[in-house]
Length: 125
Image (cartoon, rainbow, N blue to C red):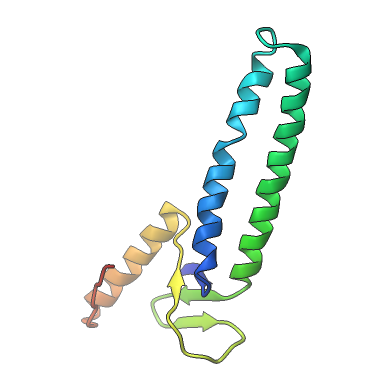
């Protein structure tokens, strides 16, 4: 079975990019903290504070991402495709494949559907 969270708000992509940048930024204060023998003690203490603030920013951004996603799911197996969400509005549905395992599960389902002689149209953006 393939499962993915449905993305219905384009703001998610901006938050995702911000999350990537926020994940990379803590390496700077962490490098200074690790090399504390080469820097003044006060600078190391300041970097610990900055590191903690960056971790708080990462958690805050993650909460915003989760609130945008909500609990809307796309589930696909050999017999049915289920879109589970509260609103009954038809719209474009993007979904994110979060792991290699999920990608392989989707590929297996597509191969199964093709073996059952279903017409599968592949598109790209």
